[in-house]
Length: 171
Image (spheres, rainbow, N blue to C red):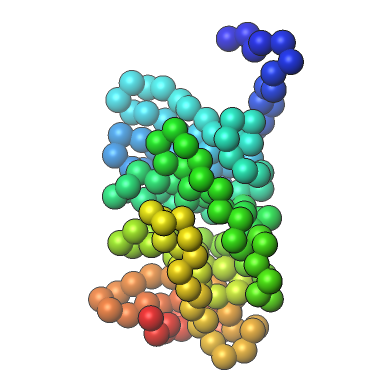
């Protein structure tokens, strides 16, 4: 397909996939530069990049909320996007916060409409529907203990993986 004159065209690699997730009839793949989605029902690909709606490049993590179909995208720049339907909702909160700390997102888990962002400054809770940060959980008393690579829930308990081992987080 030819692009109209004076329009942007993508020249991004789609081979360096950093994360893949299955949700319903779609398979989502994140690269450092964009997200692409494969529709298993009609064998079609669609792409989202900075050229057509994403806020940035340098994707660090992605998660698909199977309940709402929302795709949560985190960038190394600490910017967050929520891709829902045909719209992308930018969330600059971690990028513009005055709270000290490295809010680089390492992984994302979604539970009951809340995205749990494991960051280098603890776990950030993001309300997917309201598009706002709810709170922050710290897995330790000192700042060097806050680096969280991932989080999981077992029953009523939350656990965070840190460089100091597995930590229980009180919610």
